[in-house]
Image 1 (spheres, rainbow, N blue to C red):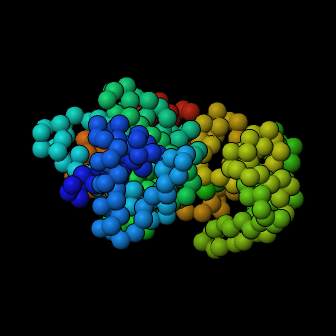
Image 2: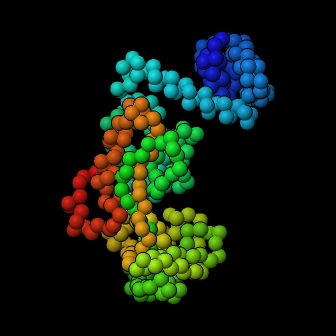
Image 3: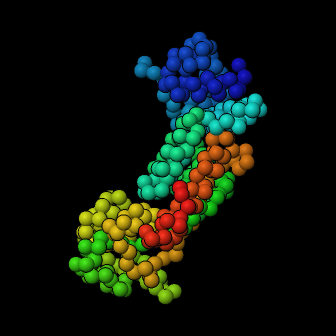
Amino acid sequence: MDRFREMQVFDAVAQAGSLAGGARALGLSQATVTRSLAALEIRLQTPLLVRGPRGTRLNAAGEVFAASCRQILQEVAEAERSATGLHAHPSGQLRVSVPRLMARQVLTPIVLDYLAQFPEVQLSVQLRDDTPRLLEEGIDVALVTGQIPDSSAFALPVGIVRPILCAAPRYLDLRGRPQTPEALRDHSIIESNAHLARTEWRFLCDGAARTIRLAPRLTCSTRSAALRAALLGLGLTRCMSHEVHAELQDGRLETVLEHCAAPGLAVQLHYREGQRAAARVRTFLDFALPRLRAHPALRGRIIPNSEMMDCPAW
């Protein structure tokens, strides 16, 4: 059995979790599957599977090899579809990574419209706030804030978001609106890192960096929880402008210390393979990019409701 077929057999067993399941998926006998896996492990000079009475599982080497096999098999399938003309018709699994609160405020309507237009694509959206590794994690497209050190990725600029300080109007009416960073010491501070007893907030006022050390009145384990607390009028919190775009538009939150805000951060769509990307990747980029660029949450400033009528539809 050739190397490619051995990889197919190994991938089927890895996904099924048993030799019998892998054999059924490929329409082979279990004896053939067993011989193929044995030949593969001998050629690689390392065991890949842990066999037991309850099935088969991957060991550490098998986990790494399985990820590589899946990537190679997917690329071969894409090449074959391209050669037969199927590359022009988007289908299959599309994996997209997006920051958690970016999905809620920005991406969800775009994703729903894309799925309606391309019914043969199955979309898997990962909500995460860390920096994704496209190749290693099998992610096709990632919406990211700031630069990422991934030389293998292509990037399309989308817009700008910026750090802001905000609170509910009723809190500000009661406690006043701080005019300087130092005035924050007289306010209730909400922090989204529950592991810190004290926090440092940095500002840029008239070109000069200023750091204020504060004792939070409330600490939350997630940014979403901190924002909910701010909406309830419990104090001031930090976030990115896109995370509370709707709340700022309808007046449930207000920004303060705008003149001391830090510079904005670029938002980009990162993807792999450039022009060789699969049809589902290219169609998603073509579909999402103009809508993201038109979205007011990614324009780096708060757009009043009176200006929203001039914004392109998304």
